[in-house]
Amino acid sequence: MAASALNTTTVQYPIWIEDDKIHCDEDGLKHHMASNLDYNENAAIRTARQITEHMNLSLEYFWSAAAEFMNTEALRVILQTIKHSQLIYLISYQGGVWSRTALYYCAVYERSDVIAVILDCCVSEEECYQLLSSITDLRERLTPLHISCTRGDTESVRVILNHVNQNMRYSLLGMANVRSNTPLHNASYRCQTDVMKVIHESVTQTQWINLLQQKGCAERTVIQKAAYWNTIPTIETIRNGVSDDEWLQLLNTPLPDRSASSRDYHNEYNYQQATSIIDELRAAARVKSAILIHDNTGLECYVFSLHYIYKANGL
Image (cartoon, rainbow, N blue to C red; front, side):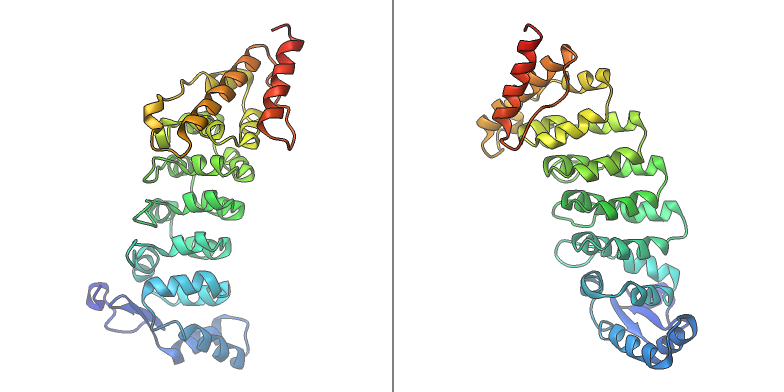
């Protein structure tokens, strides 16, 4: 983007953007740091030099380096010295082959501190929501929340959800990637149960049930995806967060037709496994024996335990 489009002909700030590059008035940055941070002059100059090593990089590589290496206070200085209109352009810029943004790299490197610094620059919840709902990776159509949930980065998930209101959270959590999976789908099949608990705490119970029932890849709900991949702790987490009636409601959602998941790896085995697990859970729920019993030996012990429950109830 040309500098003229953002009115940067007069340098009011130590750092500005021109032709998709970050430029720096090093003396101005040193002065800003010396006057606004609790650093002595030598420390300010040293930190300024470290920052300005990144200044001639494109925006994509700048954010990659910032997310991986940069001290958050140094980054805060940079963002404070950029005009707000340019700052939003800097943060939301989609660069490279896959159009990845600043928040993509922050989520990948699990830098919840950097995510917080970036979102703190927004002037409203709406501006935060605009950044967080933007696609950070064109190929997979991922939002920052998709990435953080997949990686089990509970702190980044908290930071993201705490910067927007409840309705905005619900909207972010319902966004689907290129495979139709929401952030909750990704957390469930990766068995990121701590992330699931953070999500549950951030929404109403009605919203939680709606998210659990939203269909993702191959038309599967969250619990069906967990059964498909045999992530039993995920199923336990879901069960512990819903009432008996809600649990039965979730289990009674019909499994998708097998043809809907024909391209999945080990499709036949996994489909039969999912059907078996859901049937077992549904039967247990109907006799008010929905407590999940299992140990580290996995599915066979888990199914055996449920059969034991059935037998104890005369089934």
